[in-house]
Image 1 (cartoon, one colour):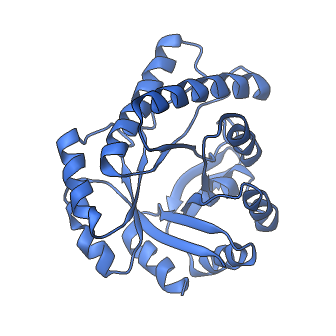
Image 2: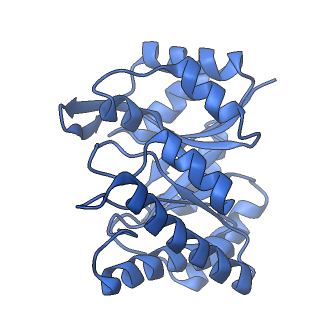
Length: 257
């Protein structure tokens, strides 16, 4: 039996103290966006944890965009790791389990060299998380451009090599593959992981180079996604990342019933 939990990506601020409203709307989750920097302090995180304790929304964090674990500059790699670790620290206080981030760019390295570099950094991050006893999971995300590390097979191999987790952005996969998406093949691979899958979903505009921008979520696309999730009996958390994430998350929730 599949299990589908749905919620919006949230920009923060007042929205985050409005968890009661999200729950009343029938939503199950929210992703807190630190995409341009970790704006939340420890006290705010503890406050939100207490607000959410009785509501039980599934919280996750999207780490800053300024991450490249395959940089040629050691300083940039260290800065990237610090941004991810700050999200892990706040996430642990929040009760947010999944820490989502874009792992890096290929630059002038081969795919294999990039993979080895990112694998090494993920393993080092895992050690620091373990040492601090933070109850979070690193979730590198499938990316929307061929220049970015993060096709599905790379991330599945990373899971097997490092015991990290994953964020599957279906819109990114569509853009990365120039409008082609084989849900049957994708779901088969996700089923083999034997774990709950953290996902992003929305419409997307793309060019031959990949993702341009997220678009509103079309009902027909939502129905196709749900059809395959149910076919493979997957447990998923789906975060809507459209320009209207709350409205589209509500639309998705209604269609999931």
